[in-house]
Image (cartoon, rainbow, N blue to C red; front, side):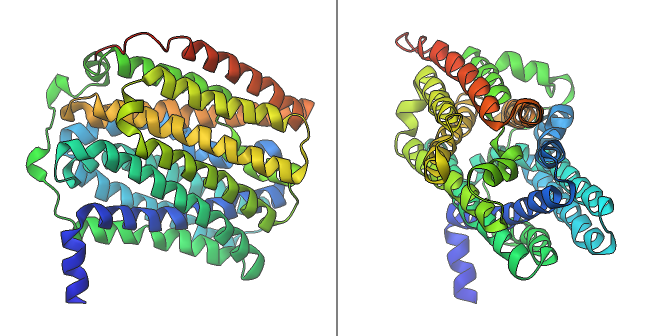
Length: 405
């Protein structure tokens, strides 16, 4: 046991990555289970989309406060508080679901997801800034952030089928319990194992710790990256909230089918993340190619979904959606963190959450409304077409010299 602890202390980056990926695996198992249980209880695409919206939309309201608090109080302190909040939010489902029936269970699951979404807003802002304290040298940050994305998507690959098989095999409570317990792993890791370079922390006080100040100081490249990502996510980042509906209509109605669909999405995300990790410096230096190219892959895959490709074709296209989306989100985060001063990285991460999760949450609700009114193929066709136009406009910027932040 002592040897294991010593090994973990020596490999700070690997330890943080492992703890976070284990936690994310449990989280995606729980999120998948909740989505399937809500769909079964409500049989409503819109209510099912509210599950992801509850996770994503709090970022619109509190990301500003999360980023400011991270830069004022320090990322490590906020990270620990947020992880306890995640555990408490997930615990609401563990306790409340067995005690309710029907509509009450749907309400409990949505409330749990909402509380997790609030805590996640603080956790993501703090974690992005905390990564700079874990690496040994500043030049390692880009590759470390890209590695984080890869392992995050590995967890997305493993978590959903675990959630689906647990719901089908041993019941919902087991999946929800794993979700809650998984948050204890990063809490223990950050408090007792990691020894970050705290001397690198740069805090902002008073009027300097304001989102408007960070917006002005982050530079034109970061501002454009955030704006483009928000638009792209608003149009095309609806598959997390609609996963249960998409899987049911394209693959099959069982929780295992949902697990298969989300696992293929995650496999695409892993592949995209590996490409980004291998070419992180080159792609970060060409923002328009990175942003426009990834958005175009997602949009073309969505257009393919509109043509009724059958279960096998849908899985191939889901791989493309996962790859394109992962590169867009991870690439935008990479650009924002690498091109921002350490003192404003918490607020830049907060603004990125507004773009990613706020746009994605609203996209899921819009896609659900379109699906209920006109059908899933129409939804894919319309939003995929809009996404392709936005991506091509961004690619048209490629060829210009990269703008200096």
